Length: 124
Image (cartoon, rainbow, N blue to C red):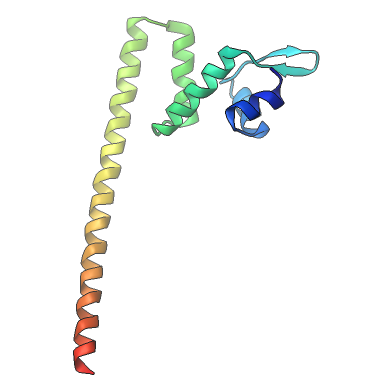
């Protein structure tokens, strides 16, 4: 399928697709001067989106793809993917802890503001 069909199917933009091509995340063939996308590019694009939904950066996705292309189904790939996922879990855990702390502080501020509002209402 041509670029126009691909972006409609994947609900994306030409700029996004071209950026992924520039990063070598997608490598569509050519039909004349136009890009030609197969089901393989569709699968790769959807995998990229899934990794992004899990919080991976494009650079991390590029590293995963490179490892997949060079060492598919090897111990090296499994070990590096395990490390990457372990690191991502640690980052997410740190973000969760930070959000919990922010929520606690905001709840305390809210409580303080509500108490002041009650006191001011009673003074009137």
